[in-house]
Image (tube, rainbow over the protein chains, first blue to last red):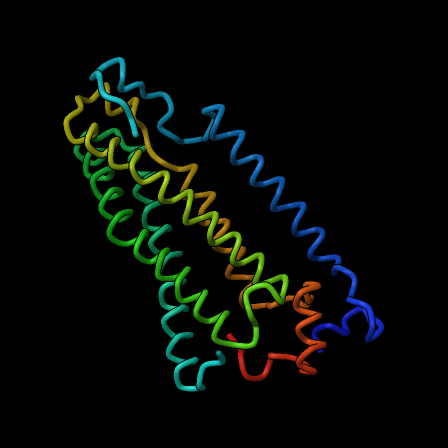
Length: 61
Length: 177
C-alpha cells in the first residue's frame, strides 16, 4: 500500500516522494542555521554575553 | 522480532508517555529560560537557573533517552522497521540530533546555574536566559510528533527491497503508532 504511492513497477524501487525532498531540504537548512547561529554566538536570548573566564577565572564546559 | 499485541501496546504507551513528557518538560524549561532572561528580580533569575538545571538533568535528559530507547524498541519490534520508511528514518535522525545537542548543552546549563547561584545582580544580568536551545529543541520535537502522527507515505529503497522479499503489503494495520 505505502509503496504504490507513485505507481512504480514491481521490478523497480519507487521514486523518492516529493515530501521527503522538501522536508530534507528544510531540515538541512534549519540544522545549518542552528550550527551557524550557535558557532557565531548569535543565539537569541542566550547566555553568550557572559564571559565567566574573565570574571571568575572559570571555564564553561 | 515482531512484538506481541500486548507488548506492543505497552511499548507504545511508554513511548508516547516519554515523548509527550519530553515536549512538556521542554516547554517548562522554556518558561524558566524566559523568566531568567526577562526578570529584573535577582531571586527569580537565580531560582530560574537552578530550576533549569534540575529540570534539564532530572526530567528532560531521562525523558529524552527513554523516548529514544522506546522509539527504537517500537521500530525494531514492529514491521515499521528503522530504515524502511522515510518518516521513521527522519524521526530517528532528528531524535538522535536532539539528544546529542541536549547532552552537549546541559553541562553549560550546570555551569551557568552555578554562576547564577553565586553571582551579584550585575553578573546575573549578563548571564541572561536560555531561549535558543529550548526553542529550537521544541520545534524539532513538534516536527517529530507530526511525522509520527501523520506517517507520510514513502518507502526507502531498503524498505522497498524488504517488502519485495517478504511480499507484504503494509504494516499499517498491526503496527499503528
